Length: 501
Ligand SMILES: Cc1cc2nc3c(=O)[nH]c(=O)nc-3n(C[C@H](O)[C@H](O)[C@H](O)COP(=O)(O)OP(=O)(O)OC[C@H]3O[C@@H](n4cnc5c(N)ncnc54)[C@H](O)[C@@H]3O)c2cc1C
Ligand code: SF4
Image (tube, rainbow, N blue to C red; front, side):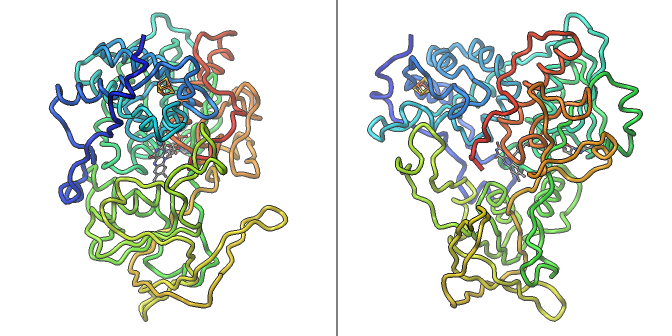
């Protein structure tokens, strides 16, 4: 039984971060490493704040954790210092808690009962507890390969090695199927590898999980674009089922803004991928912020990742632009009442590292020099409205134009769905109006025996949803191959998108 008064005795405390000057001088994760005993004690105290609610909103689907993480159970185990048992309960619902513990925006925390009133001192630091359980388990060597006892003799191809593909592959391998993950990049991990920067997720954390998966029997093939390097005929002939976990990597562009064609104006991923490759030892990035005045267009976490990357590369200045007005700093119950995801200003550790944020502004034009390189941006103050058909309209509200110096402009304005690819043409799969791959209640696409999960299915989303969909699609594929499945299925394909990003 948890301590129902714990939250009255202990204040909420986030984990410490390394000093800004130190962390922007390297690429390591921003969190400070504490001596083990001190870390354990701090996190046990935080877990003690959990009341073990009769109805734990943190744990449930639409507002809380999409994975159905057994949060009150492992909070209580941590409170008692039973780290290995806590890890067992955490891994029961989440293949990769070391990723979500670092990366998740934690809808569980905004749905925590202690977040209802500021008088309760704030939500339990669930994400911090999760990461510490996972890290402790890896440090103690208790995350071991779990090979299947019996082989089914059925072969499954997973296309894409992001968190959705990896979760599906691990579940299906453990269920006894012969699973091969195909990845067109030279390294595995999808956006975990080449989108999300090292300072949010050190790639050694990804590599040790991949080693566990290899030891369990999952095979990996890199540098292989399915549909091209492995034809659809070969795919069909070689496998009994196929999982499409190809992501939603078609970056949204803004071609209509005058000056978009100037050199120095790029999509965010053109900046982030080479920066991640640099951390992997692939040499200096072709697009770097070093010594430049950087303007980032967009307000989400891709924009924040560009911000942190620009500072580590030695930018002269960084300004981040958002078309929307600055959101409130605390939850407005009239707009987004508890336990739903609150509409509040999101700040990331990268925002503590410098740079300026401007709200309710839009780029009117990129201004170039004689060599055709961007040298400035012109901004106008705007408001955003919906027209009669519900389309977004950006309306200037002043004639005043502000000029910002700019040698590198980064468009971090979202993703438009799955990229066009030979694989989908070969399987005769059409994209939905949202640019995603639709499926039935059994996660099967219009191509028989071909399933879909992750961003490819729900559009650009979150790591936690990718894992939840990967686990659910594994249940569906296992049922398809064997007639029934004991694998868990945390989410249904029609689960409402969570407007977290
Ligand atoms: C910059 C950035 C930062 C983010 N930060 C966060 C964060 O902090 N927290 C969070 O929760 N979420 C974050 N996200 C979102 C999160 O990364 C995604 O929701 C998640 O990675 C989706 O997983 P996925 O497996 O569906 O697809 P992806 O991770 O996109 O992986 C898809 C993979 O499929 C491969 N592929 C595609 N087609 C083929 C083919 N034909 N053959 C072989 N391989 C193919 C691609 O190369 C890619 O590796 C971020 C996203 C971005 C872009
Ligand atoms: S809602 Fe908060 S206090 Fe209640 S069980 Fe979940 S973490 Fe604990």
